[in-house]
Length: 118
Image (cartoon, rainbow, N blue to C red; front, side):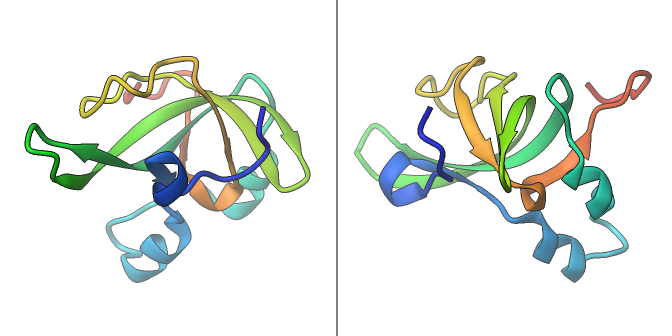
């Protein structure tokens, strides 16, 4: 696996840094505390914000934003590795099981048994 973060230009998708979003909207945008996001382990599920570049039938490109679950598979330094657990609505180019890298700053939720949102 290529141990790097993706970019829209190179990969056609990237992850949002959720920390500035949470700082700008503290009353409406909750994210897990940093210590929890720094202590993720393989087997956990986390939700990330994906920005995906999609071309329409005329070839015009636009960015779609989707929040999707990722299964944590490991960690190397500050980079977590994981596998996508959802099928994006906007593209068939990404599929469940797709490997990816992310950092704690990208995590907007950590799944806990009993959570209503799955």
